[in-house]
Length: 267
Image (cartoon, rainbow, N blue to C red; front, side, top):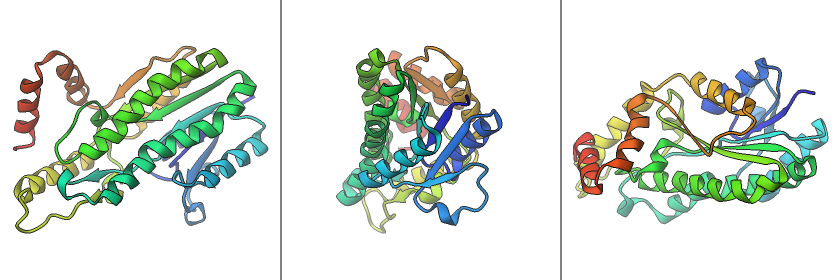
């Protein structure tokens, strides 16, 4: 029987690319969207799911299991970007980011685990970010939410391994998707103490996304992970320099690494 895959945030960007790739490989793929009725071009079924709403999550998982009789693979992909000086980002926007990037994925995991335990098998793949390995200027909240999901994955992996369930992280770098359009930007305020530095960094971040890698790279990486009988804890997918930045953080003194980042961001 074909394996059943659920991808949160499967209507665009990386999630859509993963879904299309796995669909062509013969997997039974379900994607999620907050408004699936607005999407008319999906190659696989889309189910309504809002990761900040526990009832919506439970309903979506129940629908997948009732239609397919099982759920083999969860790809926790739904997430949102956020930029701005930490001092100037409204606390409501910080909470919203953590609700979407951390608490939502945790609730989806909690909803699928009973079925995977029943099956004595399953794979959970959390899409994090290379930004989650370091505190990046004007992306501190995003880095923190994705970094927290990395650590949750490490702990969860040990807790559910006795049930035959595999858990892993995949941290992408910059990919050419529409994430910048959906990102919350703290407004660039005239006269702000951060006006020049934040403006420069914001332009640089958007340029990185627009010139990013092809999302199909992520789809191919996910496919290989699914095929592996014992996946690693962490995977990084992206440009060499982005992945190498994690290595540098491990080996360089903290202040050297900080100086390197500040030079990169022209701070």
